[in-house]
Length: 168
Length: 143
Image (cartoon, rainbow over the protein chains, first blue to last red):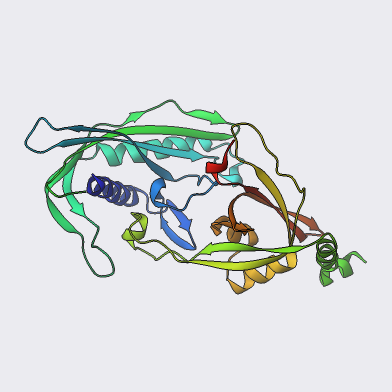
């Protein structure tokens, strides 16, 4: 299931970057696309704004078929304070822009991609393609909440994949 | 007179003297190595960064006792010399002190790694003379 999580994240990051290349985040001095998986980063009390933060939540394994079907919940949280130059008055518009980007990235066809194994990938080494696919359902956008001047929205999406033999 | 105070960093030096007089000590600022550009394995948690401990002193805990609330981790306030922070920002080529503290993994104090929850600065004539860090104990020590 780790391969499915990695594959989904890389797919989502590449689609979001293609939609809006200017959405970036600085992580340890390096500019990266503005999408990250919280469990893969250093723990921090700071919440990055205008960034898509993925959290893996529910997990179900259905062993009825020839290959176990793994269903994972992916919670995507994003917050915005608006632009300081606009006094934060554009925070609603910035949240709407992030909603649109996420809806477009997750709604774009195909809803499936080949599962990749990144465990041996690295400098100059490409990930290996596995035998099954990762696919996902339509996202569910939860109600936005306001914490002071900050707008927060959490979107959930169900990610499914078959667990291949010997796979972690 | 104000120009003289501003230009010579007298306030920062006075703060350093006060920090030392109040029992100024040294803690370690734990910094992760810079991220590797376009390295997907680091974003996937496969490759992990190396860490470097950098001495930070003189510093003083504002209160000897931590602020403790039920259901929350203990918190401390640490006053840090602006002179040493300015030196670190320059030598580590960070854009500002806030970026330095945001990039830091935590503060190692008496073999305990405390997370930096907030970093603010006190200024005189636009020049910081002391930094105030709010530190949080590890969550596993939450009461």
